[in-house]
Image 1 (spheres, each protein chain N blue to C red):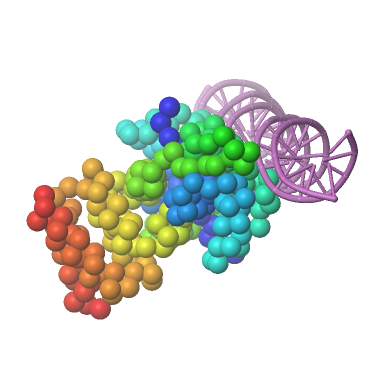
Image 2: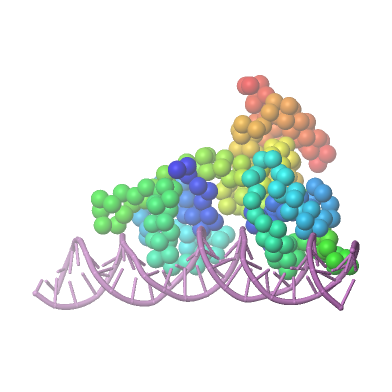
Length: 129
Length: 129
DNA sequence: TGCGTGCTACGAAAGTGTTCGTATCTTAGT
DNA sequence: ACTAAGATACGAACACTTTCGTAGCACGCA
C-alpha cells in the first residue's frame, strides 16, 4: 500500500517529527501547543490517537521498547511534499507546473530575495540538465 | 464570509465550470464523465447535490430563470489557486515559496521547455518589480 | 504493599464530505 | 387531460477525520 496523503492534523504532527526527530507523544503534543502561528488546542490523547492512526496508515513508525513510545516519521518530507504538489497540480492547475510556479511567485510571501534565489536555482537546473 | 477552500469533488466541478463557462447540471455531469484522466463515476443527482451545496457555500451562483438551472463559478480560478497554494505553503513548506517552487520544478512533469518559460517569467518579475 | 503519576488503548461522539434513492415538479407532445 | 421525459429538492446512509473521556497498565516510592 502506497503512503496515502496525510490529512491536515496528520501533517501538523509530521511537521513536528521532521523538525524534532524521534519524539514521544508528550514531546509532539507540547511542540504543537508551543507553535506560535497555529492556535493548536487539541488535548494529549488526541495526539496519541492520531499517532496510532498514522502508525496503522504507515505514516510513522514507533519504538515500543520503553514505556513512553518513541515515534518517528516513516515518510520523508520531500516525498510527502511531492505527493501534495502533485495533487495540487492535477487538482487545480491542470497539471501545469508553470502555472503553479507563477501563482506561487505572485503570493505576497514571495520576497525579492526569494526571487533572486529561485532564478539562480533555475539557471542551475538549466545548466545541470 | 470568505470563500472557503473547495473540497476535491467541488474542485472537480469548478474546473469544469471554469473551462466550459455557465453550464447546466447535466452538462457538468457529462463533462466529468468524459474526462479522460479521472475515472469519475458519480451519478447525476450527486453532481446536483454538490452544486446545491456549493451554492450555499458561495462557490457558485445559479440562474434559475429556466427549468434547467444554469450554474457558473462565483470564485475565480486565480483566487482559488492562491488559496490552495497558501494552504500548501503553510501546511507542508513552512511558508517557504522557494521550497515549494523547488519541489514543483523537480516533479517529472516539469519539462525543459517549462523551465525556460519559468526562467523568463522570473527575469520579467525581477525587472518589473 | 499500596498510591500517585504518567503512559497506552479504545470506544464513541461530533462534524464533514460524498453518494444515491425517492419524491415532486415542469414541460412538451398526443 | 394524460403521460413520459427530464429537472429539482431532500433525506438518509456511509465513510472519514478529529476530538475526548474513560479504563487499564507500569513504574517509582513512602
